[in-house]
Image 1 (cartoon, helix red, strand yellow):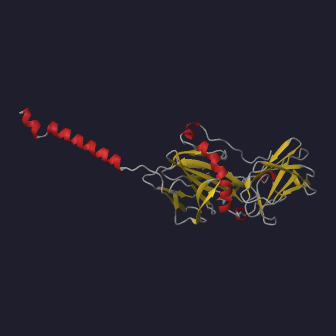
Image 2 (image 1 turned 135 degrees about the horizontal axis):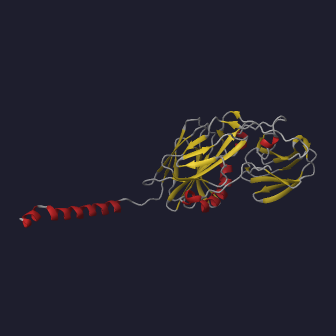
Image 3 (image 1 turned 180 degrees about the horizontal axis):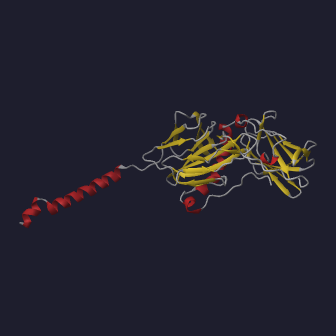
Length: 364
């Protein structure tokens, strides 16, 4: 099987304490498909390609999107092989799922099937079935360069290749990551879609887990659907176990961010190098994003939803993203303050009546 990772749905009491997450994720995905492509056009070109050599176990690269500068933007090529590059599979049907619609292409003499002319923002997966074995790629969003996939069928006649040992190394947070901020149900919900990238050909061992510490104010943090099984959440601490396979490891987290007045503050400290990525706010009323770090900030409408969008700069390990969400709906505090003041005055009057000079004279 060439399914990378796998998805799991956040569940249990912690997930239940994040109101609206399950209802909102579907809308967020649909809205951000196009917006993400607009903000991160060219993102595939920013990725250093994963090296694929004849010496490595191809299963490590199976289904992983590889940026292909030699292909025109909007083109996706899939090569189907059995076990190794020496065994191209000719005449196999590759099903391209383009925004959920099937397009079928038969592999040529080089084992390749290709489609062209896809618009930025298109979501695509590739699936092939070889001898009842389902081969499936990761989903990718089309940017401004071509993309290649390798799908590798099992070679039953070959000796099983030994697993590739993890090597010491590092990972980065890639440019397909994003932060999405959404006010709903009188709560400010924050969604992290973090793509941890291993740009080498072998699994990488960091010598320990990758720990992403969420903002101190974060509440009810939970993993969302699509998060790697390597990840766990405890309080504000997201822990992702090593090793990291070549390509991307998805860490999808949701939490609520309490605030006072009309402004919320988010400070995210990064444990590893970060490539520029997009930040979105689903605009409600006067809601806005304010940060000296955001670049190319703009407001637009996608799928009928008004968005405030910007991009972070590249950040080194140990740096912090600082931003404010302003213009949030909030209730004025003066009625509460007046009520508390009146209650205090009544208590004080009662105390004076019970223990003041008049009460002492009466007792005498």
